Length: 317
Image (tube, rainbow, N blue to C red; front, side, top):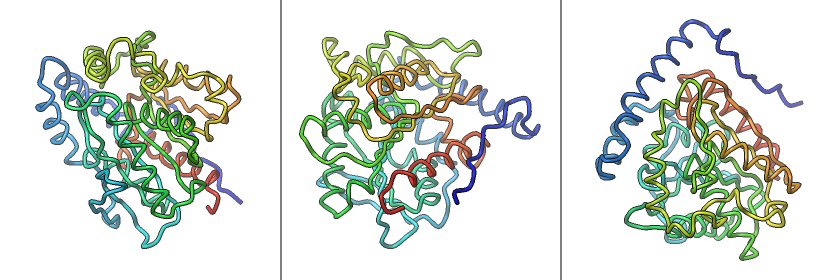
């Protein structure tokens, strides 16, 4: 019998230590991330600063990490088992222009440990050096590499946060176009689904992480203006005829983030098309709060629920 899934504790009922930690993190992110990672700071400096901010990420010591290649695409491999049969292709976020497998180890390493799967974090090409569809091509080719390595599509999931969530969804649209096998499940975390930024949310308490000007910069660097509503750039604009074929998806999103509506609209579009999709909203939390796993109770709850979702949909779980 499956154990009951943990539920999110309302903010007012959290232990005082968690309330203090959440408030401290929120203030720190507002100062050190939103206040720094934005125009006019050059992208090279943004990348360097993100590396500094993520040096203290909570990473399990028993996860083996190595550099590998999947179909010519550089990836980071994270695993706790010698020969896992399940695989997660993870696509990091960072507005298409910053981030790497190393900066997102707090998510990928903990996902590998909790799920028992091997996680391949894709080191895809970034903007402004490489515009659309370079990053999508890399994710697509890495997925092909998993299939070539012998992983059954029924035992593969694709996951990603923010811009990586965008590429997760876009990769499935690409697979539908090419007629290739689809993965068993999708995990978009706070995905950017509308690069045109037509319906950004304005959280009453503010977004401590994302600066709207940084999101605007991301879109401008990623593609030409006339491509902003292309479904491969903005998956929320995909046709129902495509979306109805999507694998089961779990979307997680914080409510204190400007991309909240991107998740809500994507969930609505998938649900209206008849796809199997679940949406989890986390009141009082920010963009990709799952990166604080091992520190924030909400991030721990989110990770447990992610793993349970994967195990429900992998064939041999």
